[in-house]
Amino acid sequence: MTIPKTKKKKLALAAAFSAVLLLIVGVLLAYFAAKDKEPNLIGVGEDEISVTEIFTPPNQEQDYVYRKLVEIENTGTVPCYVRVRLEFSDSEIERAASFSADLRDTAPAPDDADYAAFAESFKSAQIGTGSDRYINNLPDGWVYVWDESPADPDVTHGYYYYTKPVAPGEATDALISWVRMHYDDTDSIRAHDVYVYAESVQTVDANSGEDYTADNENGWKNAWHNFAG
Image (tube, rainbow, N blue to C red; front, side, top):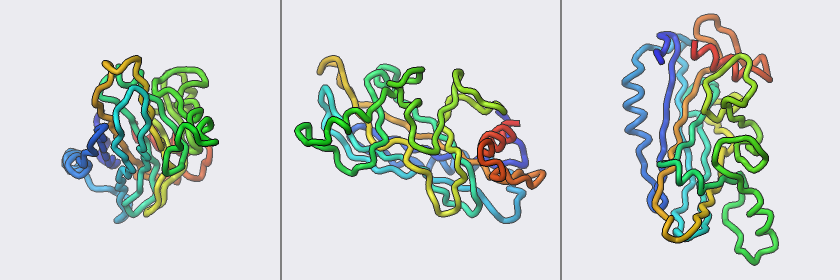
């Protein structure tokens, strides 16, 4: 897709291995910034984002959970809307994974009184219809747009969109907080990557000066639709 000269897209990417968190955000930010050289036309403001993670390396077993809290911080000087892609290193891993938005810092032990509620908070990471899929149980402020989603105006599919504007210095609510891996047998266990790819767009149109936040319900759609051209 060709990026219009009057618009600016900032990308951030974070990758977490099951045993090691790879800090490669800075490298990819530099790469994408180099690909987008046109100046931003809204005063001196600039939209910059950063993927913020809390990651706890797990002990890999047939069934295990690990902490992976993902938020997107606005490190720029103007409000922006944010969208995110979550990608696994391969489809087989995705089939074994589920996400939870439970915000506790530590996973309860199986014999704890609230373990059942914690376990029930996990929903399949695979994209699809049904109440067992995470995309249909997202935290407040997040929506996932795909072929089954009503979106008018249309926005790019395959992203988790944060529908609230994010002010400078603020962050989104967590998109995910925990990952659970459940394998059919121990021979299926393998190391994997979970990639977090984020983009932002300003809440004010660079050409017309229109403030998309004036439309509380559809502002995020209008901003991304206009960005896509």
